[in-house]
Every structure is written in C-alpha cells, then in structure tokens.
Amino acid sequence: MLGANVLARRAFCSLRAATSMSRGRTALTVPQNRAIHASAPVLKKKKATTDFESLFDDDDLEIVDAVTSKTTSSTKPSAPSTSTSGRTLGDSRRTKLSPEARKEKLTETLAYMKPRIGRKPTETHPEVRNAAWLNLLQLASSEAEMREIISTMPLWTQGGRTFTALFSESFVRRCQELACPRLALQVYGDYAKYNLRLTLPAARQLLHSLHRLDISELMTASALYGLYNLPAAAQDYVSCAIIVNACLRNGSEDANAIAQALLPHLRKLQAEASVDEKDTYHRENVWVVKSMENIEAMLKEPKGAKSAPTPDLAAAASASAEQTVSP
Image (cartoon, rainbow, N blue to C red; front, side, top):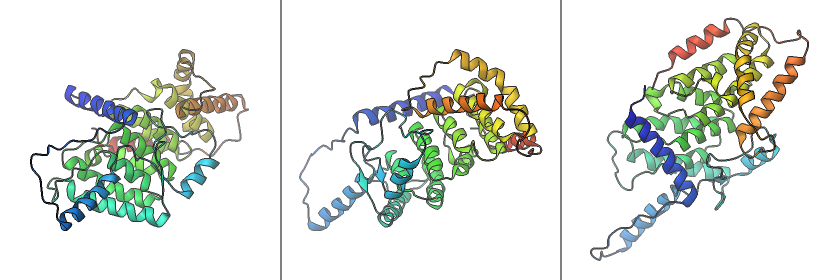
C-alpha cells in the first residue's frame, strides 16, 4: 500500500504537469543586487548555457521529422494523436530537424544532462527540468536511441528526482510509435531500477502497444496493474476490451479461456459505460469501440479455424509477473 506522502507527490506531479501544459512555464526572476562585469568569456558562457536551457523549455515539446510525419499520416484512426491534457504537444511551436541534426541534438542533450543528475552530480547549475525528458523522447527516432535514454533514467531517481505522470504516458506512447513496446514492458517491470510509475492511461497504452504481440506479454502487462495499485484490468472497460479482443483473435485454448473468463466483466462494464463513438479525439474511445466491434464479430464466427494453441500461457504470464519488482 502506498503511503499518503507518495500518493500526494504523485497527484502534485500530475497537477503540475497539466498546469504547465495549459499555461506554459513561468519564468524565474533573479534579484539584481549588483552589477556584474560581463566580459567576452562571460557572455560566451552565458550564451552556451541559454542554448541548452532552450532544450528544456516546457513549451517546446514537439520535434517533427519527415519520417514521423509520414508515419502519422498513414496510420489508421485506431490511435489518433492526442496528448494527455487534450492538447497536441508543440502546437504553438514546431522545429523540423534532419535525422542528422536530431541525432546530434539527442547526443548533446544526454551529454549535458548526465553530469547534472545522479547521486553526486559534478555540475549543479542549471538544474535539469522535467521537460528535458520529454524532449529526449521526441528526439529519439529508433529503438537504440530509446535504449540510450532508458540507460540514463536510473540516474534521475538516484539524485532524488521523480518522473512525472506526463513523462510516463509519453514514454510508453513513444515506445509504441518506434515499434519497441517490449522496452516499455521491461522498464515498468523493474520499478526498483527505473522508478517509473505506471499510470492508468499509460497502462492502457501499454496494453494497446502489446495487443498484437505474444499473449503472454499482454497478460504480463495486465499483471502490472495490481503492482502499481491500479484498478484490475478486468475492472477497466478500455483495458478489458483490449485484452478480450487480443485473446479471441489469438484463438488458442488458453487465450480463449482467458477471454471467456473476462467476458462477463466486459459485458457489465459495457452496460455501465457510456462511450461517444464519434469522439475520435481521445485514443481510448477509439480503442474500446474498435475492440468491441472486433469482439462482437469474432463471437459470431463459427468455431474452428483458429491459431495453434500457445502452451502454458497462464503459467508463463504468472511467472513473468512474479519476476517484476513491486514499487
């Protein structure tokens, strides 16, 4: 059971992230007690610091490249692009970077951050902001670059800092966009190392990113709900619909058993929930509507022509869940 202080800090982080997205970052004011001689070396150093500060501007959160834009425009409406706060990240300002410039900026940002985080940072000013992590996610354009970011994450909590809910939700979404959702499952499965909390929106995104992969991985992700004190996946309409849809599509004996066990819960949630089918702005609405359409269609199909059974599915999922570290 999480302590009251942990829950309060989590709520505060979420509120602060939402507030910063809606009104922008408030500039810090520095008292001017005395005039300081600004020599050429001082001005040069100040300019370099300002350049790196701009990397961490809370409002400059979207970096668009040709590859991402092309991929987004060709995707189906099953995963519309929206932010957690109901606002597109970076809609006020966008910077187009070439792949080379993007890679260079990612390398520079990581090199700038590392001396300033960890148990004993060698540089203490300026302090790295939470927005720096969001910039890293948007600079990453491959699984290898996501691994670079992940390898740096433990330093953040070693220095007494915590990741925001916004970063958690952006992280799992970026893993899906770069076709490496197993990395997200790995990170959330090792809380002791990464200290990245799984929120309900992030958990739903994680399930959606895994629903076409191995069923055992999907069930491992669903087991994380309890470890992070979230409502059980069977009690959440979006999560339950995604799991049942994936299990019925898999068609193995174990997957069908899971689907049949969850169907009564899904029917109850369906009767209680109200989903606006015309609302395609919110991803979760699209996921649940599409999942329910698939489920109804598959339930009407005659039994037969299904995928080969996956042996010991439940045991594999249980074993994987037991290996995760509880927060």
